[in-house]
Amino acid sequence: MRDSSFIQAIAKRLEKLSGRVAAILIHSGGDPDSIGSAYVLSRMLSKAFGLRRILFRIPSEVSMHSVLLLEELGFAESEEDLEKADSFIVLDCGSPEQLNDLAWILGSGKPVVVIDHHSTSLEGFKSKAEVYASEEYQSVCEIVFDLAEYLGYRLSAREAEALFAGIYYDTVRLSVADS
Image (cartoon, rainbow, N blue to C red):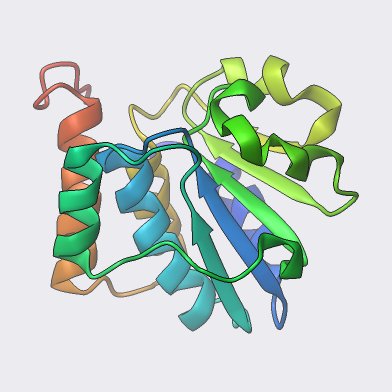
């Protein structure tokens, strides 16, 4: 685990969502890192954190490779109105602009938690959200993997594949991986 205090802080924050409805949003168009992390985190929120319901949305038009990954995972955007969410979790989104037409959540009065590996999130979301960002990680999938490890959450083969796809993509086929 790269940063146990960072992961512990995320876990403590997510525990507060137990019994509630949360919406996971990712950056415009999506990519394997944002989709893989959203897929696994949505399952963890349900199984490990006891959320009542998890909604999922991708701002703007979804890219073709994202459509294929979503189909492979059997993971789909929620049809349900996002206003039904008690809180929002934003993954792999370096700035509010990447939320496009869903940026309204930042002024909704509901809690917004941003989990990212881009330090630009800290500045971009400032007082609009509670930001957990660390450049110790090359991808949000790595953060979710460490969260699973911290919680003792056993990943299914499909979940492990989703995280690997995101890590592989965001590290340019592991070429920018570190120890």
